[in-house]
Structure formats: C-alpha cells, structure tokens
Image (cartoon, rainbow, N blue to C red; front, side):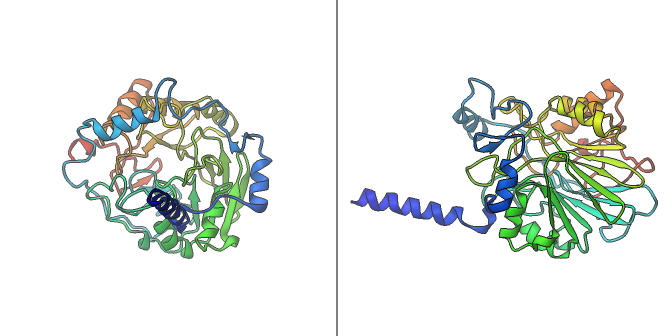
Length: 364
C-alpha cells in the first residue's frame, strides 16, 4: 500500500510539474492540422529532410549521460568574467548598412532599414525550465537584461528549445514587440503564455512573410529537432532568410550539417552574412549540431560572403572547452579563405564597414 501511495505521489508530482507554463503546450486544433499536412510530417512527428538519429549507432543515451556528468571536461567555463561591451540597444542603425549586436549563444539584435529585429533572446540565468537546473550563463555575460529591449519591431524565434525560446525573456520582451515570426507550432507555446495571437506569424519551410513593406522573412529547413517536454518534433525547427532593401542575411538557428545548406544557397543565396552555430557539438550527437569545420563548409554552401559564428560564448551545453568552437572555426575559415567576423559580446558589427576579427577569447 505504501508503494502504491509513493507511485501515486510521483505520478501526481510529474503531472503538476509538466503542466507548468514554462513547458508551453503542444499544438492543437487548426495549428495541429496544418502541421500534420506538411510533407515532412509522418509517424506522428515532424521529420528532417535526411534520416537524423539523435546519436550514432551503438551509442546509448546512458553512455552520453555518463560522459557528460561523470567524466572530467576541463575548460568548459571561463576562468574569469568575459569582457562585454555595453551596447546601444535603442537607436537605429547609424548608416544604411545593417548592424548586428551579439549577446552570446544565439541571441542577437539586427538593426536594418529603420527596423530592429531580435533573434532567439535568452537572458535567464540558465537555458532550462528551472534556474537551478543546467548550465549557468558564463560570468560577465549578464550585462544586457530582457527588460532592456523596448519597441522591438520583429522578434524571430527559430525553434522551441530552452536555449532559444526562453519563457522569462519572452514574457518580458513580447509586450513591446510589434510582431513575432517563428516556426510552425511554436505559437502554441506563446499563446499558452498569454502572448496576443494577432502578433504571431508561424511559417513552415519555404513560406515567407513581408513586414513593414521592406522586410521579408522566409523559413527554410534545418537539421535538428524540437520539444520542451518528452514528446519530440511536434513543432517545427527552422532557419530564416532575412531579406531587406539593402541586404540578405541567413539566420541559422540550430542545425547539423547536411545537403540542405547547398540547396538553400542555390535557391536563396548568395548571402551578405550568415550567422551559423559553431558550438555545443560532440561526436555523441553529430547529426543535430555542427562541428566548427562543418560550420565553415555550410557558409560556403550557402554562398555567404561572410560568416559570423554563434551558439557559443554564454552557456556550456556540451563537453568541449568554452572557447574551442571559435578557435576551430577561425582555423577552418582560414584554410578555406572564408571571411569571418568575430565580435566581442555586445560589440556592434556594421556590415562591410566595421567587421571586428580580434581574437578576444584568447585574452579572456
């Protein structure tokens, strides 16, 4: 009888915890119906263009857990607070050239053509449903707060993982946002959190929207997965093509390397700048994140004139040293003669006018 009560308590606790708002909500109704009509929906879930196992054959989930939690991985966290520039968040771009301010990981602000576009803002202490679980933000990376963002024109959310869709940051920023563009299904989370439905536009792959008569956003395929609870791939994961009067940018989100980069380059390229992930990789999950060398090849496939590596510099979500991704991507880009821009945290990049390449991570 006691065992039964224990089981009932565990089940009850599980149901209470997983119903908390931070987890969001699975698509339903018309949103679910549209998802199920997509060509890449089968067997009850959304699929990648290529077969994409979560880990290589012969590697178990428990093997990965053991490596992550019980083996030593030196250098995952910086020894001292990282340098962070205090950025000007509120002003417009100072010239016709787009400006990009990176805040660490995959969060950045784009100023272009009088508009301000914020991508995947994560300003909580940890990219997880609870602040006491998971990797904490590196020391020195908390200069900018979610409350600092006022009157954002467009909020772009690539997919629903906690290190890209942050509950507290969204609750703080969304009320002052004019419009939100995200992958199909993610709007269900936002509506659960009280975000006005009229603000939300969800796109399937290769769908586009034009905003403010000058800004076009197109969702394009990525090789990844989604899920905030235990049922995966019920919402879509995307990269986005951002096209304005003056430039074309590739906003990569999360993706393993595959032929889709070349297909996107042929269809939508060339790009003035590609912002691509280069961190949080490991041989235990080679299909859903890119190694830095893959990142360089992906930029070449996209026909990008310049690569800006992101998805590093704020959280340690893998087992590599914190600055290894950028070291490797710099070396790989040099071999391929691919131009890079590597701003410090909070530093403003001005496309083709101010393109910092200082190796600041060697001094941190």
